[in-house]
Amino acid sequence: MAVQIQLRRDTAANWTSANPTLAAGEFAIETDTDKYKIGDGSTAWTSLGYSSLPSGVLQLSGGAMTGAITTNSTFDGVDIATRDAVLTSTTTTANAALPKAGGTLSGAIVGADQIISAPVLKDVGETCVANATSGSTDTIDLTDGNVHNVTLTANCTFTFSNPPASGTSGSFTLFLNQDGTGSRTATWPGSVKWAGGTAPTLTTTASRTDILVFTTIDAGTIWYGAVSGQDFS
Image (cartoon, rainbow, N blue to C red; front, side, top):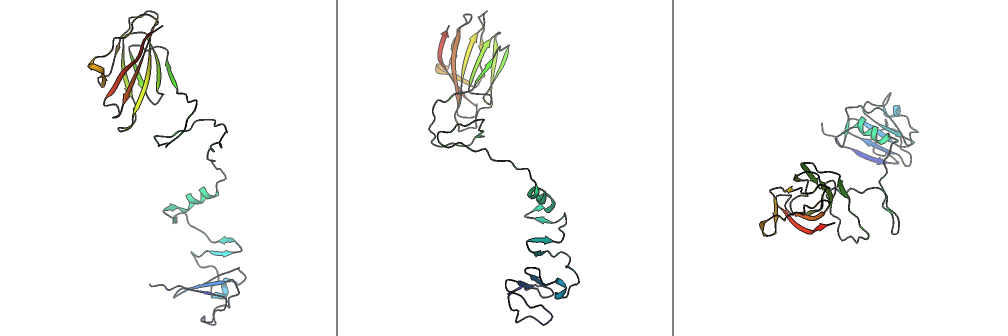
């Protein structure tokens, strides 16, 4: 059935005598089979030939809505009952506000691999992941931090995990400490490449420290290892 909708305001000269006269500010909508009045609610729906509000029609009167919306109705593809529960909920979650210039920021901001362009940073610190003892295996997980402090208590095989995606540079600094016994060795992942193709000889004296840096630009397919310093006591 084709439907034509007419919208009229104030005097309804073209309406039949069966329809009410519209007051100022009131509107009427007519299809080819039905007529509806939208206004301040002063004229009853029965004057339009209805004994009650037609099924499926909502009436606005003084800002109030009457009529029922079934739970299987949808709005923008969302179940009406679900949307209504969200709209009427008194529980709100405020967005964390960043401080103005000179203010103090508390808590953590998770960027989740988003780009922060052209920042100016001052007095920046990095999380240091302290492993009290290595054991025979140890995993360096970049999600824990980019500085790792490991004390060797046995000959240890290392694994590197969770580097950033390919095309993004990711690196970490490793403080590698000998325990009080010393003579501990490290076995590096096969993905690590060293200058000259040879891994450095670690300091094995008890209670000494070597500092190494590892960098990847292809999600850990290749790690470039370099010695920052050795035999710190």
